[in-house]
Length: 178
Length: 279
Image (cartoon, rainbow over all chains, first blue to last red; front, side, top):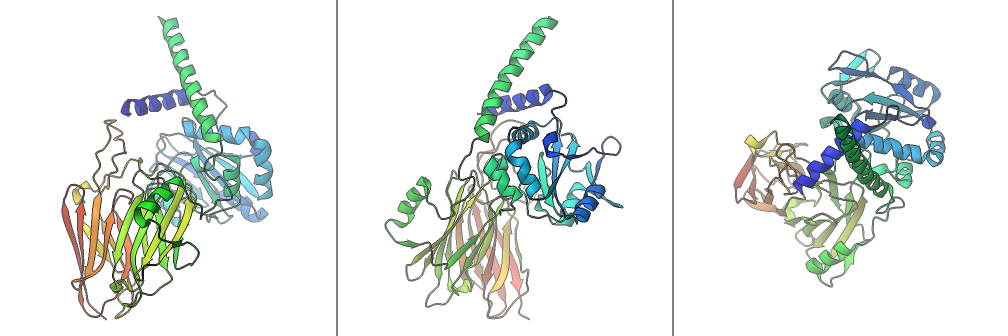
C-alpha cells in the first residue's frame, strides 16, 4: 500500500513536470482576471485591490482561484472547467462572478504567500483570519474563495476542489449551497 | 543512451498519463448525491449499525427533538465541525440518557457514544469529526423513557481518516484542558469545553517521510464529572479529530471541580481539572 502511494506521488510529480506549457490556469472561456505574484523570490504577493474595487463598483462577486503551475490537482480542476465550459460559463455569468486566477507554484507555501488589498499586505494565514476563513491553518493547492466586493467570504469553502468537480456540484458552489 | 532514457521516460509518462486520465475520468463522474442531497436517506452501512445498536426499536427522525448542524462541505475532512442541539431540557423525570454519533462511511462508523446524566442541564454538544468519504453523519438521542430520536446530514468531504496529522504537540500528549467560554451560571446550564491534546491516529495515515503507516493510537474514553458527580461519559474512537474535544453544558449548584478522566488505546491515562467558583 505504501509503495502504491509512493508510485502515485511519483506519477503526480511526473504529470506536473510533463504538462504542456500554456495549459496553466483557468480556461480563457471564463474570462479570468489573471494575477501574477509580485515580490522577490521567496515572497509572492498577489494584489486583489483592483478586482475588489471592480467587484464593488459593478456589484459583482469574486471567484478567486489560487492554482500552482506544478500542481496536478490544479490541472485536473482546470481541465474539468475546460471540458464543461459550455455548461458552466453561463452560470458563472448568471451568478455575477468575476473569475480571478492567482498563478502560483507549489514552492510558495503559506509563509511565503501574501495578499495585498490597498495599503495592507498580509501573509496568507493573517489574511484568512482577517476575513474569517477557517482554512487559515493550512494552505492547500488549489484553493477557491467566494468573496464579495469587500473581500468578505460569501460562504466557507472547503480546502481543495475535489468536492466540486462535477457539474452539479460546481453549480452548488456557485449557488452558495451550504 | 540519451535516446533510451528519453524513450523510457516517454513510456513512463504515457503510463502515468493513462492511469491519471482514467482516475480523472472516474473522479469527474457524478458520485454520491451530487445535488438535491437527501439528508434523511438511509444507507446500507446505517442499516447494519442500526440493527446492531437498536435492533427493531422505532427511531423518530421527524420529531425535531434532536438537531444536527454540519456544513455540507467542511474546510477539512479531518475536522468536520458538528453541533448537536437537544429540544429537551434535562430533568430527572425525562432527559437525554445517551447520544450516539455515527459517520456512516467511516472505517469505524460509531464515532462516539455519550452516556449522560441530568447534570448536563441541556444536552447540546459540539465536537469535530473525521469524515472519510461522502456520506451521512447521524445523531441518535435516546431518552430516559426509551424513545429514540434521530437527525442526520449528508456531507461532502473525504480523506478525513487518511490526512497526515499535525504532530506539533506530541510532547503535550494527554494534556487535558477545560474552558468556560461564557463564565459560570449558578443552577443553570453552563457551557464548557474540554480538549485532550492527542494525535488520535487512525492507523490509516501515512508518514510522508518514511512512507509507512502511522500505527493507530487514539483516545478511547473521556469521563467528565463536576463536584464528584458524573456529567457524561464518552466512548470515542479515531473518528474524532485529532485533539478530541467536546463543548457541553453542566449545572453548577456550588463551587467544585470539573474533572476529566481520559484513557487512550495504549491504556495511557490522563486527567484534566478546573476549579470552578461561583460568582
